Length: 130
Image 1 (cartoon, rainbow, N blue to C red):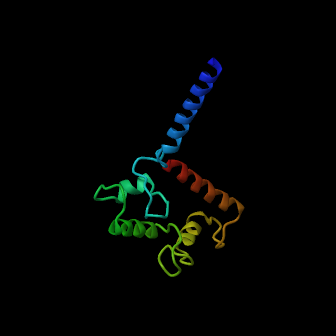
Image 2 (spheres, rainbow, N blue to C red):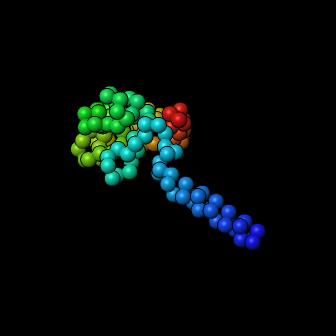
Image 3 (tube, helix red, strand yellow):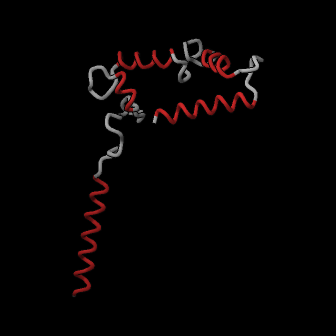
C-alpha cells in the first residue's frame, strides 16, 4: 500500500512538472524587445536595432522604421541585397572600402597578411558590439 502511494505521488509530480514545461511559452528566454520581424518568419530583431530605429516604442518595426534601418544598412555597405542596389550583390562598395583600408601594397587584392589584418579588425568590431 505504501509503495503504491509513493508511486502515485511520483506520477502526479512528474505529470505536473511535464505540464509546466509544456505550457512554458516559447521564446521566454529572448532578450527584451526581440520579437519576430514579420509574422511567420521567426527572425528576431536585435535589441540594438530596435533601440535605434523603433521610433514609436512599440517593440517592433513598422514599414517606415524598417525602411530607415534598411537604408542605414545599405549606406554602411551591410548585408547583401538585390543586385544593382546600394549594398547589394555586385555593388562592390564594401569591397572597395576593405581594399582601401587594408591593401597596404596597393596591388588591388589582399595578400595573406592584409587578409589577416582585415579579419582581426572584423573580429574586434564584432566583439565590441556584444
